[in-house]
Length: 546
Image 1 (cartoon, rainbow, N blue to C red):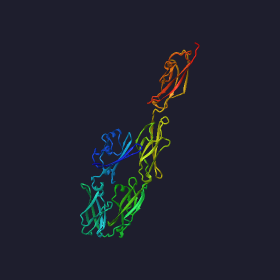
Image 2: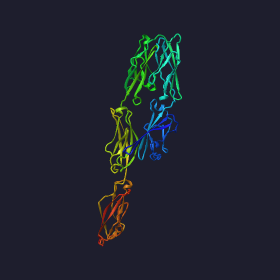
Image 3: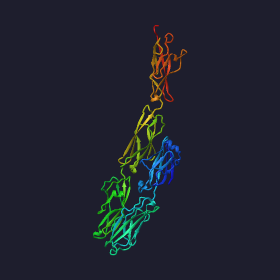
Image 4: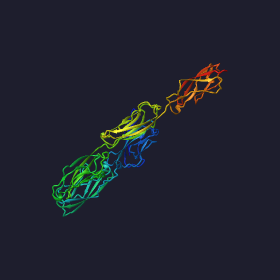
């Protein structure tokens, strides 16, 4: 199944559209199953997904969801096992963004993974052995290992059954799943009549169909130990920092037993531990010191709850609970993730043009996880924060390719921990040319001399203009402006080479008829539209003794 839950859209001044949409699907759906029509739910045309090169952006590289750009659909890419993905964490969800370009837009998508009943309750041990004195009092309790069901909610463990019920009954705590399962003695034991009792503990879940798991309880009845150990506290609490070394003592628990001799010797243990707790904590069975045997990571788990048992040699027990809170240290640098970026931008780009979109993540908590980002100085760009942990790099002043054709922009992000941790990334941005510079002649006017009786076609002078633009925008052509000299077109006197600017005489000049004349030459670049400038050229005819 798949259903849309919520949709929010926001528009910001930067030109970006930001929205949120949420779906809920069951785990274990086959590959290719429909999650939702993302284009329809965002109010977008499917063609927009194609023209905007829509794609999924996710920081952790999730492989479970794919986007059908042509149909605007979200599909299951790989089978999703909620227990592998989230373990016991609820709710379980995938988070990612849909990125579109031209213009840049991004939408946040959340997919809630609903649990199905695909795991049966499992006991860590197939068999547990108790040694219980025949003098144990009615009402004596014995802590049993709880079953573990990887499913959550109604699909997790919902009840226990103990068979047979001749001597013992179960003590359960309604609506308190963190409490132990306890076996309560309800009829006196008689070792002489029954030295060993075998019971079966069955755990059932609340799923449909219902699933179950069993554990064998072997009880050996022994003589005369009529006092159980008693912990000094029913709940112990301790705090430890995540960088504490192995061997650190977290807390020391204590229990006492009113019996004497071997019946008063207490052994401490931790029960119902999952793999992480077994790897990280252990207890000295002789003195009750709970110590670290592995590494703590605040970002993986912020607290632990351990079930403690004090046992005497007669098999009587008492239980207690230890809650360990893990304190954060600043051990994670901010992560800078480029969501989308432009490599080239024209020099006439408008102010506040979005160049790059960045996502920042810091796994630490509190002040250690607060991040501020900034860029290097003296560049025409700035960072703007659109929402929490999202930044846009935008232009904040005019660009001029002729002054700077490339920028190396360094984005640095620092957290507020002590000492502060930071990371940076350098973005290279090319500035493309626009035709914003006209050709400029080397001189404001030119004068050239030619001796009369010259041959037609002889070179008289060369004019030169340069253009600060680039490539085609800087390619200069020279044009003789239309004018007349004594009623005759100037083109009858001179010509100008379009490529080189060389001025040639079209005719032979006679000093006795014309002593000088002037005309204009235009320099025009190859831009669109072209830019140009003019210069005046004066030709002086020199006399010969003819």
